[in-house]
Length: 393
Image (cartoon, rainbow, N blue to C red; front, top):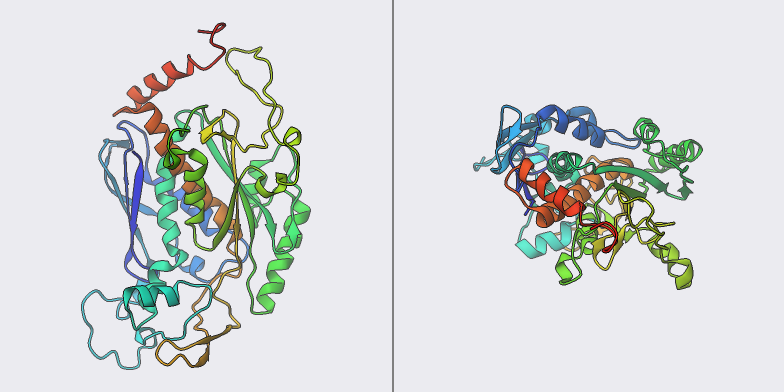
């Protein structure tokens, strides 16, 4: 089982990441993980925090001389803004903090955040106890963990990409095929250059109005083998696992596998992916289309796995909404904490990380192995069995 845990608060000393279930002898290093962390920090519409942090995960355990040991991989990710929050986020009691603005209780509840349910659930009288952990800063830890999953998948030819489909009312028309290098260079991670320009204008307009804007993102995993996941139990279905992982990302409100909602008004003959006759034993079971998004019956079907997700506009707004005070219930303006105007572009990188971790888990569930060599042996043996039963067995 590949799984991960994170710990840490937005303005605390840093983030802690543990990834377990990665087989031994996988080549990996801090530089590889840093490239993905840097991708998360880019994007038009980001806030001032991205100017402060230059994320680099430090590997503490589970790797020796550039290769995994099969033991849990432990990493830390420093919060450089901690120097400004040492008193407000101190571990030990600090007593009277005087006029330290950051140490004051936060009682103005922000609509759209975890503030109200979090304070009620845990019995807090200070919203900061909730907002620090509920912050999207935690997604940096997910990207570090996801980079480990991606590195594992790369060993077997599986590659992940993401691109922005829409921001606000602007929708892209992606080219076929998508130029992934151009996506990485785009300020909004969009494959449609004309739409990207309009998306940046949409973000500028929201910022000028003291508002925020959301959008949709697509994650694509290529070269995924047939048979990851299972039809036999609800919690082993790969599409359900991917959907849950993406829904756990801050501000995500909808997930679809493949076109999703776009196909519900069509008839079955216009939806399902025709299977073509097998002419190449190395690439059996090809489809004319991929409307299913790469899954059937809770399992990968050999086509690219495609997942889309929608992100609501960020709930922290420079021109705050009316709200109430935690102590009195009286009308106030919501608390404002430094934030982005649009988090859609970096959300793709976070989505890649979450899908990578799910696929890595499903991959190891299917093929097992305590070392990369053993996993590869199992994988190659299985792939020899994938084809028409009476022709290529």
